[in-house]
Image (cartoon, rainbow, N blue to C red; front, side):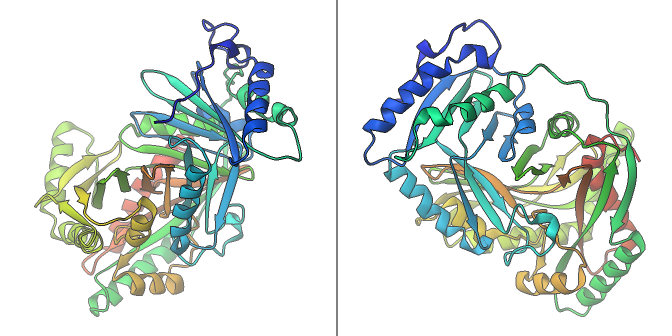
Length: 465
């Protein structure tokens, strides 16, 4: 059992909500330096702090690299980089398990967190919009913060190097804490200058029609087509504001952000790809969509219509079947016979929660790589769908509909499918959404469904139409 360091002498005034005034950086860095000097086998030195922080998302505003995840039960934030891994594709996720184990063997605490993700296409990304992200990357942050209803704890992680002293990194750590100590910034909602769709609505409908023809020919069961809306504003949207709005409007989702070289991919996803805690796993099938009603009666009717829709039930069953096929060789699964309803702020989904117990050794990332992409975001059969999409979708999704999440060094963690998301670069937010196409789909209806899904992000950006 690791004894974590609680160092009250670092705090000048525990009654204040100020971060930088609470933490005596000289004492903290001096203690870290002594630890590093005595660490002959470890790659890193670490210290744990208790902090008072009201606003975690604002931390991303002043750094080039970091990440944020709000699950509802907790918020976690990583700022700066103690170590970064770049992978050539999501098919190489297994290598991160070896890296995780090496960090643990080198003395890092088991509750240290690595977060990151990967692109939708396992072979990588081609669109230059995503150059700063690459096919997959993972970050062990310099400053990690976990906020729950009970308390807020932080872990500082410093790479050990004989070439420089800990105090040489003092400004970096002080700046990371200072980002969280700034007074609230009130900024008007950026004015929308222009918005364009890629592909255009007419072209996207044409591609849905193509997909339906392929499905009717019997070559595939399902295809998922994505589209993108590029919203340009008069000023750069603040990432912290977008995250707060996403949480406000989408309380039943997991809000996430990963920032790489100053660009931020963020969203509010309802879909968990996989959670692993010791040998217990959780996943879900999420496919089949209907809009929310404008009154309780209409909302009830939409739910009943969704539950009775043969098209949506078949689409959903395709996802359930694939998940079972992938996971049953590794785990004993508990799968409900019929789907339930997951109600979000603007749509209802058919939802089947799936739980299980591992009976053979397997890791969070190795199983996630086997599951991704599920038929909910790619199609079925998987390889045929991916090849068709690469040729006909006309859009490089980047990290949209890929995976994003975190794991501790013990191997426990959660991965989500990165839906209802956008890439924010400067003055422009590139917003993504997709729809599952079956042989009896109606193209115009699928376009409307994509608009419902895009609203989750556009509303958070202040775009109402």
